[in-house]
Image (cartoon, rainbow, N blue to C red):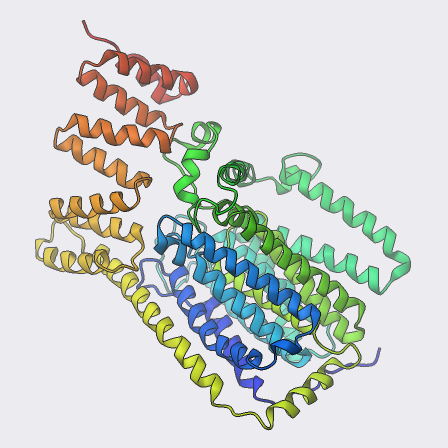
Length: 619
């Protein structure tokens, strides 16, 4: 086969593509060890800054050209607009605005995150061509090499950061073995498929082989099945599609074998079939509880959802009784562990369906790109689509993590963008077209617009940075034995509490630090304020009920614990505490009701046995 080399494009888009790749690489690799959340908020800040700058390029392009947009381009522009519109409606109805805007603690999957990812998608779709795709592939290979190097340091005990990590040591730059496994799988897949592209030189192919070997070692060492499943589904899709378009006479046989492998894989994940011992993991079963809770939220809040990234505040209300009986009454989840169900349950059906529509369009255009291309161009299209499919496979069982999601949205934008190009000689056509248009254009509009957008973005980002830093410092200085730190802790805590953009959980954390340092009344006032703003937060209710116990105010403690019942109906520990309170008040009827409730679903637990022996009427 004759080598097909994408043509170099020399136009003003080159600088913006480098800005995109720099931002994407930093989002993946950067973490801030002096932040309370070292990973997610730092990545969100870089994402916002990158997308803020690139939004100026999008506005610059479409300010006079929107009427010339082709039908296919108009379709995905309309779908992304609809997605963002309904996302903003759900944000308006989110009860805790700052969580809807920025996302929940250690998630950061709020409105701004999806807005920024959508901008990345649209910018990439607007500017991409085959030459730039090769640049993206090479950048991902370098990022993959760095991730593998850092992962190798972690599994050998040589990490330069001493993480307080309850998980497997292999967390790379995303803070969790499951996330790390999925991210490495995406890098491994890109490297694997890149070795088949003639336009990728030998230097990058050698690095790719290193990534493939190290990536497999690290994924296996992470003890997370997630990366292996991502790689498996992506490779199967690659093979099916390759045989479908290239080796047509083997098409039916390959499809049949691949379908069987996928079926056995799914059965194995569900603890059935011959692959169960290899693929089944307890965390797969627990996801069933998360997904069913999400379905219940959708049924009760179909149009606006329970609030953007507010799954965690509703989970205990909607979880099945089997969950606390198997995993503990206080254990919870802040995410549906399925990106699609998360969006449906927290944003509503319009957000969910518009997101699905966008994915369907990307997939259909990706398949059309394969049909309309040959040689290296076809292999590039297949790399993008197969890796994107791998990303969507992990989205079925995992949480949106910015460090991973950025690649899914980037590759999705590449697929859409390549679909805009001429099918005859895409790279030449787009090169000459852009050059002829850019020669007479004034280059001042875009920087002015981008800088104007970046001003509020940088203001927000600096606030987020200070909040993370102040929370980290508050916890670092908290030491009840070191009284000279009292004013320091109080000062940093107040900076967090008084910042309107602070994560409510951070306000609780620093309030607890104030308690440790003796500022009990000040902390109580702060937590009462938090409770008044978010009356369904169980952490606030539990702390306030314990505070009233120390103050020997039984009626108020009963009031708080009664509120917990409606938000956490399968918490036998709370019923037991209420039963004890009623016993102290000699309200034997209410005590008996609590005992009866516990025994109705938790009789065989330690809590149920304590209820049998303790909740007995006296006299």
